[in-house]
Image (cartoon, rainbow, N blue to C red):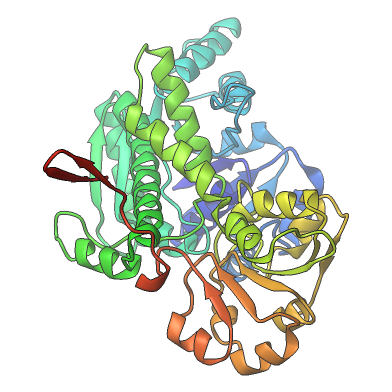
Length: 458
């Protein structure tokens, strides 16, 4: 098939490249001329394992090309994918400015039956908005043209996006017509290596599925983090608790790892957008609102542990391992590191930071005072008063702890991702604070209140 993908950000570039990998002809469009020139040279704007090689391979084969000419792309394609960003506006709603612009461009240049596919994450009702925009542009041209609108949300994990595209868990296709449904199913039968379940539904339901999926994941993360904080109070071990509940087939083990909260370009934005969409429909998402509130608090948990342990941080030097919101990406959007670094800077601490991929992003994102970026994790930890682990990169798990102990001024590790066992770190001579794991001797005991002949435990 001939496919146009408008928007060469994370979703658009990955989607277009993977369609080309499965032998389709793909033309990717972006208004950024510099980005398009770089893509033609094989220089990609994001860090995603394996993507650079796949872009170069398929561009060299002629199946994947790049342009700034939207008219050319729409003339070329049978399917036009809109993969532009939907950032938060000031009220935390999804800003549909770019989606509307793509719909307008499609309506301006369409000259025969084509399918407009929303791949961007959009609130319920966006398909109807796009359809109205397209119809108006066609009418303004005094034409009568047939087209279809499809909602085909993405479910990509940063760091694993290629595999998620080529081997998806499921494919959601929201359509109004059997013609569009059959065309989309044909595309995915040839564009995936496995045989995923295809969920065919109406457009509004497809739009809701995307937000509901991210809200569910966010809720699981916030649930396990809140339970981890309780474990620290009462002497439980959150990792064993997670294993115990994850073995229940009704629950499963995924997204039950305690830590310092979720971040990235999807979960925080989509959760807040769904809450706001609920308000637009006079509906209150109580559970999802709580998940969002818990996550914001969780980002500060490690900082509070540091203050409690070290006291005032002025003139203290703190090492940070990990700046991206998760491993295998350079994405720092809504990363817990941003919250923690800002608090450290406010308290007058000096910061030495290392990340395998996100240092360039950090330099563009974080205010530069009191922060130094290093080339290795060991260099970051040298002569520091404490080490904060904020991202679970594999390189950190392989560090020689005995050597690390010699490098640090004060052997204190605060592990926000639980990448080590307490026994291993304490054996190397460190004071080790993590999330949801604590010895009984450090726990708080419940308060007993006596009422006549009864004891009530709170």
